[in-house]
Image: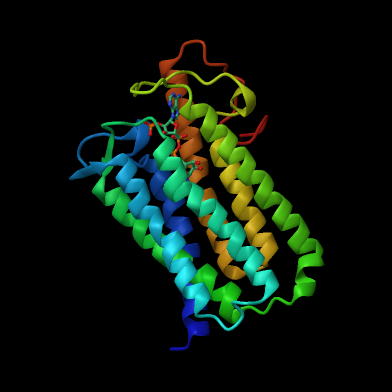
Length: 252
Ligand code: NDP
């Protein structure tokens, strides 16, 4: 089977996974973070889990990228840089900053995410450095410019929102506080909104099936979880503003 055929099949598998995920996580909230609970088998340290499960997005992506014939061209290099900035934050900076000492996550969740990230990294890297063909002129197209702006803006929202959440706790604390500043005044999960904008931007910027499939998967995974976060806040904080939406201000 050629890389091109494998790529197309892989993208369709990811679309299928997105459909399965939106159904599954709509019925059963993924058991990590505030939604962690017993009954999901062995647990591992939460920080270690994040590093292990996200690592393929740096390592596999870089390895596959370097094997592609377009690896030294400017447009793919810009895409590589944007991808790696996101994943160096997600894999190394974010877990190191979280105040979650002693917290765990199910090994099952980390393993599922690791397998997903292996496939997703391969699909996106093989497209931008081998199968796709972006000339330098692509950098001045509306798709690239709008996509890149969305990606950078989404990243900023994601990092800002996570920064606020992380600082709700003092060092050593592991409890939960009602967030009440910045983008958290509008929605329960602005970090997820930022993530969704980012990968929508990636899909537009790369104008690729892999980018579209990943953006769909991100929405399938994070929109139901944002709804679960909002429900969780409303159950625990009597003064939680009822007009605060889950992920899209004033809408959802
Ligand atoms: P959460 O918003 O649930 O948690 C983010 C961090 O803030 C955690 O350390 C959490 O602690 C802490 N925190 C959250 N709310 C509070 C609160 N009210 N009071 C005190 N501390 C709080 O995000 P996730 O853990 O689900 O995701 C982390 C990042 O990963 C996000 O940026 C998200 O966008 C991204 N992500 C991306 C996915 C994708 O499909 N592309 C999938 C999943 C996540 P604790 O862990 O103890 O709850």
